[in-house]
Image (tube, rainbow, N blue to C red):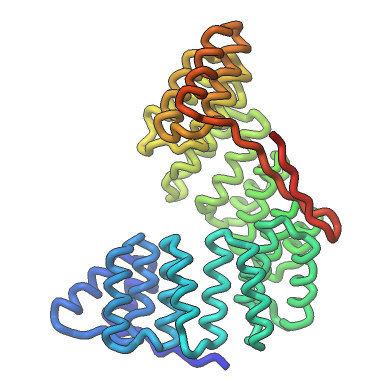
Length: 395
């Protein structure tokens, strides 16, 4: 049975509800400085703010305070701690806390399930759900959203459809979050026809609904559909968010629409959306696929972020396709500095040298790999066909 959580004190409520976690934490520190002790009403919004701002130190201090005050055994505080640790990428502490609780209600079980799903541990989420069923916990819409997220991450369409059927049976008025999770699950499983059927049948849609469909089509090379949805969404007056723009830019990357990508990228700020690393990465991918590798390198050099391996790796692949040797050497050097033990970057550069007829340089790279004991690892894939799951290894 679920209990009702009383509201946090008014000092924290405005900041937490308006999406200003840093301000909420400042209010919490001021409260402590004035000698006002926190309680089990104050701690959950504080812990949520810690996760949103990656304040691991303050989260640990808040946990210690909860233990000192005897609030850790409060189920709402425990649930907030689980989600806080999950938000800080610390699932082991979240699970340790869950296992250490003398009592567990549906809220705590659901929080732990959500933690696994949100941190992309779908198999652990599904195993945990089995324990939840055995414990006869209430299975509400939040649980179903987490299950659909796990099924989508694994590409388990058959299991996802079973969850969908369960939702139809259990819920008379399906909440919007569950509709959105269904669209997202079908998109991730590659069932665009069913995703669009669910989308068309929604009583109302928000930016998350549109973005799930746009991103799915964009990432899967269905560029015309994705960009058509993007235009429809704008025409209906729904403000896009960072995920929407990522989907539109992905569509441009797959279709070689560089000018359209630039227009979308430059239009982000007009919508009040600040470009993130993932948007710059998508722009670099668009330029690389179109053979404009020099522009991609310039974008990387001038952007306000440090590039990650995925971004550089994508442009390196474009260097090989388009024979951009100078850019390939520059990118490879950066990648090898980032991850000196990853064989793929060495092999990519060696292959680029071989393609260009520079066989001695290719051998030099392979010789260096042997000298520093960098070995090529086998590739690994997993696919579900009907009721069986196959694992494919390539050496």
